[in-house]
Image 1: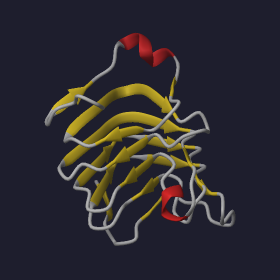
Image 2: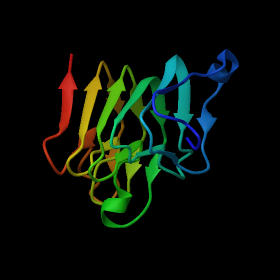
Image 3: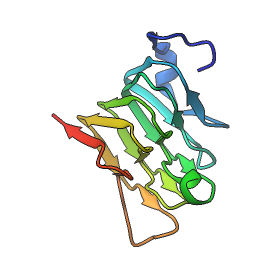
Amino acid sequence: MAGAGKGTIITFAPELAKQPIVLTSEIAISASLMIDGGGAITVSGGTKTRIFRVTCKGEVVLRGLTLIDGNAVGEGVEGNGGAIRTGGHAGLVRVDRCTLRGNVARGEGDGGIWQGWRGCTMVTDYTFTATTVATTPRRVSAAAAPSPSITRAR
């Protein structure tokens, strides 16, 4: 999201809805912005990379996206959050009307969303499926937090 200024709203051309957008590296978000997929956009980590890393101290909104096949590679906390990982002291991350499917964490955290210390993640109107932690295969998970800061709101 290089060059995205505070308050930027990112939308997608309709033709991008026809197939997943497959990433070769994670998307780093360091500014307050909104990414709006309109319920039609799928972003994939291609089983090779995490999808989003959020380090913004402001507000980030991820809306109407399907996030699939994210892979948090790395040891310990770096291997957390296959679809979305927020950094320590991140601000508010709103995940609204999103589907997370098939995201994997290779570290000690969860495959869907991993919330960094002292941030806040609010998840509304969502679907989590087949999200796993590779190092503890007995655990199938949607999200986890080192602090009680991931909130499900309706």
